[in-house]
Length: 317
Ligand SMILES: *Cc1c(COP(=O)(O)O)cnc(C)c1O
Image (cartoon, rainbow, N blue to C red; front, side):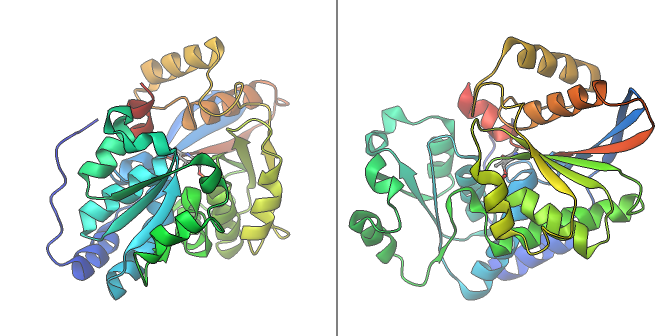
């Protein structure tokens, strides 16, 4: 991964608008055919080197709003959060102040920092470290509220970055896909799920752009029973769209890896020369290839949404 500093934007308002205006469609590439299933990949990790894939999509409208009204953006996350990394990188790239409220008071000691926190700090994010109990109760804990109050008028986005504006951004992924292939071309679309915000946006986008494929979320956390419920809360159109969550491919839990998954990732990268990581996109691709293998043999077009996350590979290792 590149480690060269990102040049600061000159005037944020104009720079950020023109950045998004100039964004080109990320490639949609054919991979292979398994058991009649022609598998394609939407290579959204190519949308930005530091604010990758779904994270840039999710932040887009918050960044535009913050730039418009010169607001600070505050969010929450753990020491390895891709969302925190992406927000800090966006702050640097677009010259916007960002604040990260991080789980774990022990991380106030810089020697405990991994790549994500170091990089967030280097990108100019103001970091606060809070005790785990306070973090869990962040909407009530006085210590957390005191930190937030130091930044009046800030935009606060939840842990993982899923809110109404983030859905608007991820819905645009479907708009792009329907520009690249007809809306009836794919019978299935697959995406990795953490909080489910990305999936909720894809569902709303499918409704708005009459995408007819079934949408499947691959749960990357173990016991993520909250997912379906949270997606129903976030998405306006969850009743109009055929979607569901697969819970059998978490490989033991968040950031866990099995030998079979490790082997799959190595083989996939060697064969296609496409980077995937073990936390989200590795599990996603592994799941789709496995589902294709066990599907009934008839012809369909399946699409995998590669949501990025390659920043996380560095911080985990
Ligand atoms: C954060 C992340 C996800 C999870 O997105 P949610 O909207 O929280 O479900 C999926 N893939 C990658 C690569 C991520 O970084």
